[in-house]
Image (cartoon, rainbow, N blue to C red; front, side, top):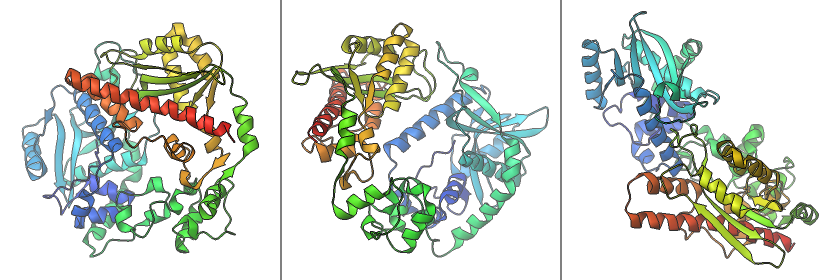
Length: 506
């Protein structure tokens, strides 16, 4: 399981690790800096999301080891780990966790190395914190193939390569059996198909590593969400908000290349007559002119669909890789909290109700029951991103079938306030191409802000709720977290209320 940490292994600096190699496959410049200026890479902190991915991956790997109760874990690192692995092999150990090898300038740890007695070969098991239903990512194959090549260079006969992933069909029911939780996929054939290409990439990576200067970071020709971690270091002249942030620019690679080649880095550099798509043009126009695009008729038409009483609903969820609660599946977005603002009539009082699970059992039934008490049978339910909130309700309906009709009815009454902005009925330069509530709120309701909150985003809410529930905190610490969670989720729904009110004035 590859963790993509930014820390660099000092002893193996002369070797290419599998993490190094995957960095090379994403961006050779990132790879060169890892090997030649590791201090620059180490300055880049992991995001909360990246930390969560690492933690989940470690947890899945620990469960995968339970499939092999006789396995032995290599606890050392670097050169010592290589030596300890050799000793285990000499002792004819059949299953080794974190078996570590180096050969021909390559270095890697194998999640689970398994001896197949019948066929007299080794099986490389690569553990991934993904699910069996997800489309297999190319990076997973590259990772596994690198290991296979290295082991063969170390005179280890590899006859099979497998991915071990979470079973998406698994639902927790009491004690978890790792055999039910995890699924093995034989990817040996895929390894054979790509091995020659990976060998060529490895040789090229060795050459890049030896160069005095890094290659050009080609990420400048990619949209923002595909930039490597060292993009800002490699391209300090590119502004934080640039042509890379234009809506769907990743789907227009030729257009982006033309912009970069013409040195149009800021959106304001783009000539007025330059041809853009109908979704890109509004964003570029408002950035260049300071105009605000407001399609009043379309906004009014949208708002006329909303019926009283009006409910403004927001969930916070916990997507555990390994299900914590009975009835849940891997990475299920389990709602543990909601905030609801209700307006029964145009001049009526705005009423706030909420729910937060503070007991360490499944929150889905009590949350759904409280929601049933708080939401009536008529009126519009306003959300921000109905796809997410709707999936939460579908899962709640499956878990609490006696409330399924109500929950499906709530979905049918959804109005997604975000769509006014995602459909570009309202476009402002300070949205910076985003339709997230955190982009829209400062423009339409500048008096409201997330900046002073202790919990300021959904990822943080998920993280601190987990701490409150499972980390053995003191009663006072739990109370503090609960108060911060309630304040954050309440702001999400009052933000929707005030954005809706601002739109009403158009």
